[in-house]
Length: 394
Ligand code: ATP
Ligand code: MG
Figure 1 (cartoon, rainbow, N blue to C red):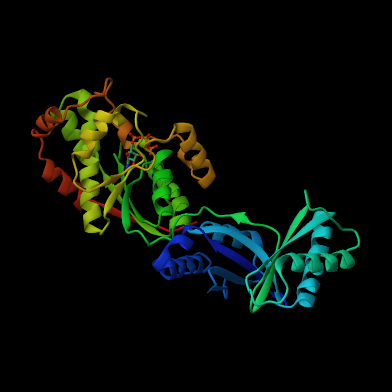
Figure 2 (cartoon, rainbow, N blue to C red):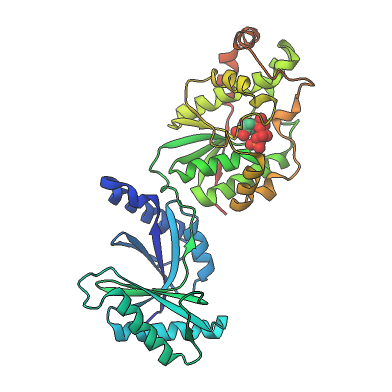
């Protein structure tokens, strides 16, 4: 019967979306389908608020689970077996299921947890649990019931057309399906923070596109390859995306030549924002996203953030703003970007680093410095010089 592996996928917050629920569920199923496209013939179906994935047994279960769990909007996944909605059939499958667990995991105790989604089924949940428990005890002589601390919770989900047996609930990341919340342009460096920021916004359903600045030949080709690798890891969650790569050196040279040294960092940041905003507008992104964090470095004091913000009119999302560095690092480890982020390559920000950057910039003074530059010309030249790299998920 089970030529296929079956996975029950539970929708997280999607389930709370009221009138829009079918739309969110449809988007979620579509995303799961997309993420499983390499597993040929896999079926993804929505049914009674759940999503069922059926894949050929030849595909590795763990790989499928990993791919499903990376889809935002997935609350949890249970590898399951299917049975006819009839107590004898469920009992038979439950015995087979437990025998396998005895063999592979050496389990000794269990407890049945039954749920009757089909309220017309003539037997109530506690009785279903008792009946199936008795069948398992008869079929698997080595097993005992332990209601307090069982080795296995055997879940029986009795539904109208089919029933399901499973024991695990593997947590997903939650969030909302990609594409349900517009598009954002992330300023992606090679550091720890910005990949996490991109991931967090994508988790809320936002499609991602990226801008990366380098200062070639001061920064190396290897530094860019590192960013591309980071982007590919981000893409494994949020799908393939475009990365706009820009050489910031002409801007940095003008700033260094014409403006006070201590203002270099904040001036460079304002140019980055302006260039990113232009690229966002051209590509229909509605927000900018950065990995900035209050107080982390000189360019991220409250004053500096205010002056940075004043350079653009597009909203700037800073999802890490109030997180501690250790927590951001932990998140980076969890999503798999940390190891790549800490590889030691230079970033364009570090190329012309002033010895004593201003930590409390004043907008009027910064604007006065910028009046010595052809801001618009520099921005549009930078935008025109963009190279586009297509980032495909690993
Ligand atoms: P990160 O770890 O993300 O590099 P950071 O702590 O090093 O951040 P900054 O270098 O001040 O902080 O950069 C703050 C934010 O500006 C980054 O999170 C990123 O969004 C953006 N940014 C910095 N450098 C670049 C770059 N070379 N290309 C694109 N965006 C950048
Ligand atoms: Mg950085």
